[in-house]
Structures are given as structure tokens and as C-alpha cells.
Image 1: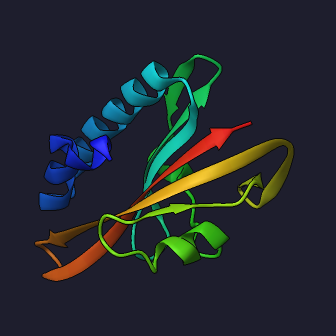
Image 2: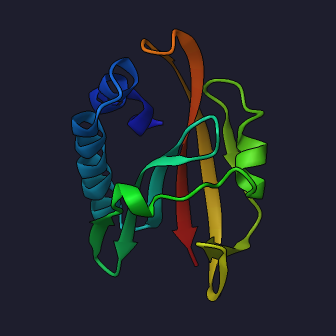
Length: 137
């Protein structure tokens, strides 16, 4: 996947900082606006917490504020994605979107998840993160 080779992903994994998260969010914004197919792009950490999310609203993107990021640990796609090996891709079945615990009945989504692996220096442990892209039907 092209996004997994982006230097901004590597920078975030080398040093997780607000500045690196913002650069990644800006890259996601440009990616989903240019592509026009993805409804959201996000990075989810090994605990299921979103650390970066960008939504596409009509033709413009919106970077989600850090205090609005969600815990997705209980979502089926996270449970499936956590079992992936590096480089593998998960494609979900069609599903209704859920935001902040509320089902959005008017939105069917298909999710793609890729595992990204890195060494977070501060924790000195291997951390798995996931790039989740949603396609709205």
C-alpha cells in the first residue's frame, strides 16, 4: 500500500509527537481529497484508540481534533485487524457505520485495514498500529 511507505508514517513511528500526528493528518487530508473514494482514514493503536483520523465531508476533508478521537477496540474490524501480519490487508463485510456509539443507518461502509509495525522508543516495545480506510457506498 502506498501510504505505508510515506515518510510521515515513519516519522510518527520514530517519534510520536503532536507535530508528527499533524503532518500525518495533513497527508491523509490530501490523500482522501485527491482520491475521493475514502470516507475516512485513520491510525488506530494496539489498544484500539484512534491516534489520527481524517473524515471526507463531500469534497473537503476534516481533521478530527484529538479530544474527539474514539476508542474502536470493541469494533469487529479492529478485532480482525489485530490478527494481521505485517503487510497483510483486511477487507470487512459491508456494515453500517457507528460513530460515538450511534449507528448511522444511512451509511453503509466497507473497511480496509493494514497492519503497520514500529518501535516506539519511549516504551521500548513493539507497537502495532492500523491504517483503516472506509469506503462509503
